[in-house]
Length: 103
Image (cartoon, rainbow, N blue to C red; front, side, top):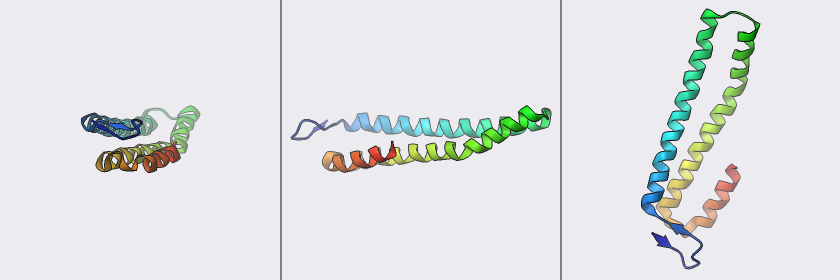
């Protein structure tokens, strides 16, 4: 555990590595779930033809950019975590500003 002079910034290297690994896995699961949902909705076109199905398909298509943007934001968050770990808390303030911009 690294503790900065201010005692306000603490960084547990193994803990951070665990968080990074968990976040990567969560992003992969999210991306796979979105792709699976896309296949299911597109597959419904083969067995269900109607206004409601078209509406669901259009709603999904409208949301695709949002899903992709969120996945990208998770990727940026992972990069910020990795950067923090690599530089250890020396640039914590700079990384905090970057993370705040993501939110």
